Length: 227
Image (cartoon, helix red, strand yellow):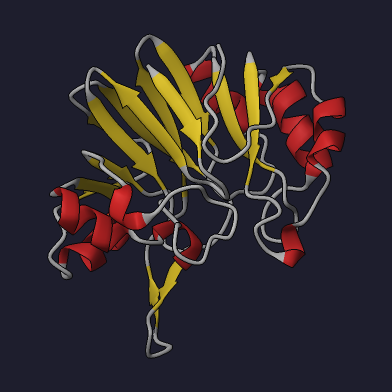
């Protein structure tokens, strides 16, 4: 199994010859190592509807005949664009050919801004808990700090790997994210995401690394998690 980070909140899973990508924001993402035309995946998993997370989903899904898994309102929007979308909601689990993903709470907002400026509601934002290749991975999505992160860990854990936003302004900052890691989720390994893509979320990830008790891996785009 391989799990790699590709800038912002983009994460790629590869297992048993299948691939899934989370929140494929590529065009407009100055930190990613990916090009849309080179992405080959079987599944696209979306945490919520903001444009910097839906990203290039439609083009990638069409080119790969990929299945998109998303909150139900977002899935309906994508289905109307000819994408094979599976709608889910918080608490639900989807079975891959190589694992499962469960949608859990995230405290954020969720809408998609169309090219004409129209803003469309896209359901509740979510985090994601994956069980793949014998590992439990928690992608927190875009979220503020909330106490039930401990409940997510207690029910679905132990958590082998957590992707946690640290960029502040739109999500948790470093202090809140460190509290989530140390006191609530307690993952074995943590990778910070959702930082430095835009000026409002520029932070020093090294300060986060200093604050957490878990094995913290500051991945550059294209690098894989080391278990």
